[in-house]
Image (spheres, rainbow, N blue to C red):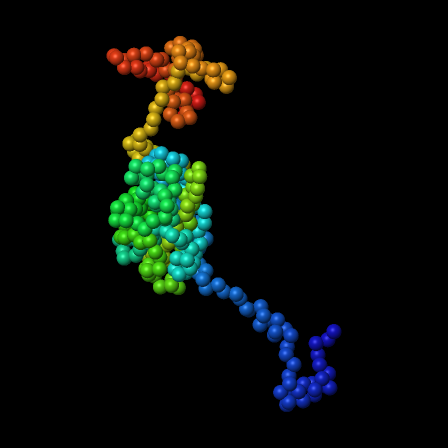
Length: 325
């Protein structure tokens, strides 16, 4: 079909124009529709995908180190994992914090910026109960924090920040320190409601339950040291093997940790019937005489020979076992 107009069609167009009834150009309508975009202003994204990923990986390192320390201190296996990171407004990020939570206002120095470190209140109370001599596995009833609770909660946050601060220092050049803790987020006005914020969500889970932690990082905190996200030290994020200096730093951190070491005699297998039939005075013959092992947890590390050292029972290490780690 030709795009040219006949003399009659041209006359009709002039007549329609005089009456203000020009037809719409269908091509122009299509073009207008194509430039329409839906913008979600609650999801600002000043950070690139790579920068957001670096921050997420840095907190994954924090989760790994904190899991080891918490499992030892609480005498229970506790695992921390980064499960999400998203860029929101400050107002939307605060709404994502699970309630009730204990919120730690954390200063970033040098500078005058702050971040929020939030832990679900149930998890904080379980840790407090353990520090007071109770069992971490028990779930305490909800309560308002007393002065003692608040002091212990501050100690818990300070220990967490002591693990997170070196990672932040290497990535962004900041040292983290506790300013104050609060049990409600309605009064936390560190930033204007519209300010872009990175929200990193961490799950803390054990054998019976799970809780949520969140780190809220205003974009202004990142912007002043953003260069470290693109070309700064990356040994926490690039997945390569640690060098000798890093390995020694890990060993220095782990050396003071106490572990239970057991000496086990050569085991022997019994049926359930034989175990139920045992009584006072019965003798259970174990394995070969003079054979034992040194074990830590579920790992058998060394073959050993039982005996005496003075008037105390002792074992002498004979050789390392291939299954030991």
